[in-house]
Image 1: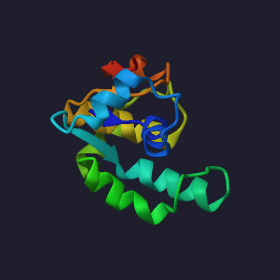
Image 2: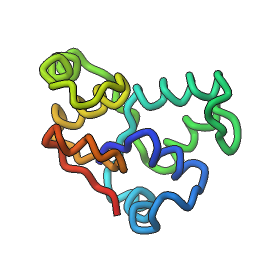
Image 3: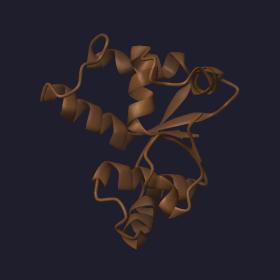
Length: 126
């Protein structure tokens, strides 16, 4: 499962906007979870601009990923090729690369975004 940026932030911050079911799925390390480098990039940008508040410092995210067995997913050339084929249902570049990564890797996406399913990607939000 590939985590969209917002459920990852809610998991990191212990935010109750994340359902207990999805929180349990992410916390269960027998479920393989990934976080796109694009999400980390988005978090870094929004944090540095003061548009996002994290519990703790950005530098703790690497340890948090490791502690929760969430694997960073790099952006590959294949992901970019898939991105170029996507229709423009979604304009957000971070979301578009996350969608392309999920489609390329055959991953479901944990997201609340209602546009993601328009791309034929399996979305989980419970």
